[in-house]
Image (cartoon, rainbow, N blue to C red; front, side, top):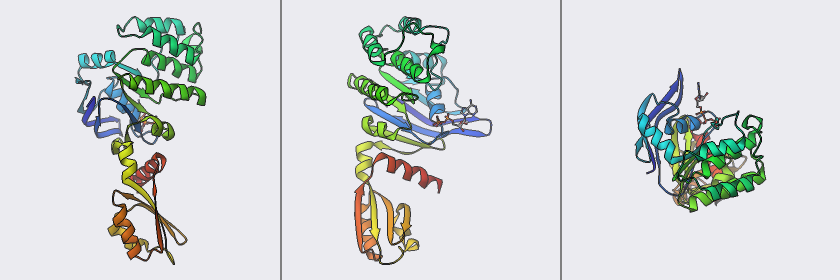
Length: 295
Ligand SMILES: Nc1ncnc2c1ncn2[C@@H]1O[C@H](COP(=O)(O)OP(=O)(O)OP(=O)(O)O)[C@@H](O)[C@H]1O
């Protein structure tokens, strides 16, 4: 595991932002950190990077303790990151910001910096405070990706980016992973996560409610559409352990968790005239899991 937390908790006054979080991110590949607004993704990332202290619990990143000041420095030295507030100096120009950051990191990749600058088309002499939101994200990404870091922690790396630049960002993140970096990124763009992530974590109320390899999750969950002669017998479905079941007219729509064959047989026994099973995409999985937990 390259990131590992146990019972990590953070509250802001009465608001519990992260609650008893157990997060285990494998080394290698790309992991997506997903979840509704305000459910603790940025707070978790800030704790991993030592930018805010947990109230309780422990965590290690690259083997260093996140609450130990020396460990935390080492984590930030070895990790390329884009944080929520982008951590840029407004009074510097893009050129100065690059030179300043470059000077700290012996693993800096000048060639990669050059290529990223060309692809992201940033105005080198413009002051950081005069950049648009998307331009700031681009700069933060260049600073993170050109570091040659073994771990990239990116908080909403597509924030403010137009579709063309988002595409470039995704390609560059995949390139970093192909060159050996582990990537952990938060996002609300499920289609992006679906395209590039090997592993997903869905956070809900500060806890991981679903995690796994994306291909395994997608082969495990099935959407079932069952047609009944009359209204579907909702009360009798309980033993089938179905997730987020909805009925509309004669049609029942539901999600199974790894037990598709048993559920299909059960629905037939309850009088279903036909049952169709469909694979689920990440959007469906996310909506089901998030809504299920809310029920
Ligand atoms: N500095 C702060 N002071 C007080 N409350 C905070 C602070 N930062 C975050 N919170 C609260 O902690 C909770 C989690 O916020 P966080 O930013 O971690 O969520 P998130 O999942 O990253 O959300 P989003 O997807 O909207 O970026 C929210 O209820 C938020 O209001």
